Image (cartoon, rainbow, N blue to C red; front, side, top):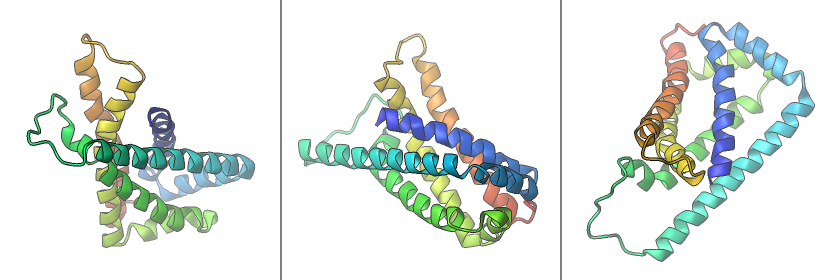
Amino acid sequence: MACSGLCLLLFLCSHAAGNATLFISTSLFQSYADQLHSHPLIVSVFSKGLFLVFAIHIVTGVLLFLQNRKARPRNYKVRTRAIKNSQASGSMIYSGLLICLFVLIHTAAVSFGDHGRIGVTIAEMFGSFLLSMFYILAFIALAVHLSHGFWSMLQTFGISHPNYTTFIHRLSYVVPLFFLLLFGTIPLLFLFGTGN
C-alpha cells in the first residue's frame, strides 16, 4: 500500500504541475498536452504502468479492508483512538471507491477524447455545474484519503520519531489541502467564467 501510494502521490505531483498551466490559459494547457502526446511511446508505457499501480493499490486496499473485517466482525464498544485523523482512516475504503469512480469518469472524458482540443474539452466539461461539483467532491474525497494515507505511508517507511511527529502530523493536513486547493480551484475557474 505504501509503495503504490507513493507512486500515486508522485503522479499527483506531476499531474498538478501540468494542470497548473490552466491558471494561465487553456492554450498553454493545450501546448503542454501537445508536448506530452508528441511522445506516444512514453505516454503508452507510463499509462500502462500507472494503471498497474492503481490496480495494485485498489486490490491491496480492498484485501486489507476485508482482512480487517474478518479479524474484527463486530465494532468496538469504545472508539477512543490516539490518532487524530481516525475519521479519515475509518473511511479509506469509501473515499478510495469514490476516487476510483472519479478516475474512471475522468479518464473516459479526457484521455479517450481528442487530444488536439483537450483545452476546449476541459472548458466545456467545467462549464457544467453538476460535473464541476462532482469533480470538487472527488477532490475532497482525495484530500480525506491522502490525510490518512500520507501519514500511514510515512509510518510504514519508518519515518517516525518523537522529534518530528508534530511536523509529520501537520504535513498530513498540508499535503492534502495543497492538492484540494489546486485541483478544486480549476473547475471553479471555468464554472464562474474566468478560466478561459
